[in-house]
Figure 1 (cartoon, one colour):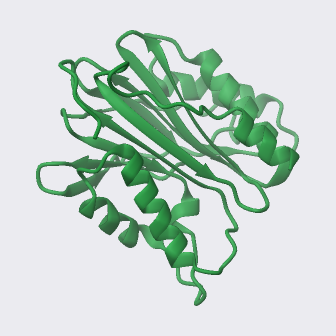
Figure 2 (cartoon, rainbow, N blue to C red):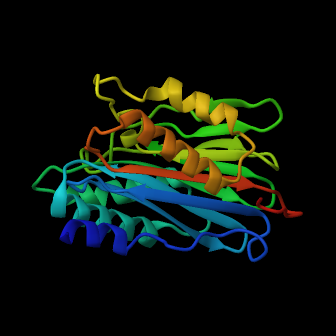
Figure 3 (cartoon, rainbow, N blue to C red):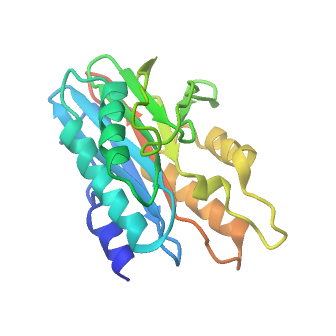
Length: 248
């Protein structure tokens, strides 16, 4: 249980939202596999108007993966600051991880910084599944696609690029690890991106907690009696805008 204790012990347990945080609300969940992997999520304010959030997936299992996950989380927090773009943060964290990495572990990771006044999202992706932006007006969804550089920890001199998108008031961003899409049923069929996208479309207006719990229950129903072989992590963030909103 050491690996699970390390992993679960450092994850945030309370989630921001109205009335304390009127401009957005967030919910996340991590279901560790029996042989714990190194999934992680984190979120924190850079200043009063900029909110940083992260999701990642470390290679490997057990205590080594959990320790690498803890180191990655610490480095992200250390390197992040107002005015430093996500691409710069990942470039610095990657150098730190790759410089002393004899076991050749790596982590896929998405890092976003949201301007809570105007919805401008600046983000960088290190080999991770692209998040989905849920378009509340028509039930549509779209992935935040960008050239995904290689995971962190592999190439010390890798440069990571920042990208931009806009979250309009009422829109939700959904992030996940591949434990969701790689979950298999008794016939070895993957849950897959198509099923995930169908769930997101039909719940595009759901509260972040309801959205996360619905996806999780669908994945569990798909897997049935098949043991979970990979961590499953989900994070949903709904933006209300500078005038605030109610998360319901």
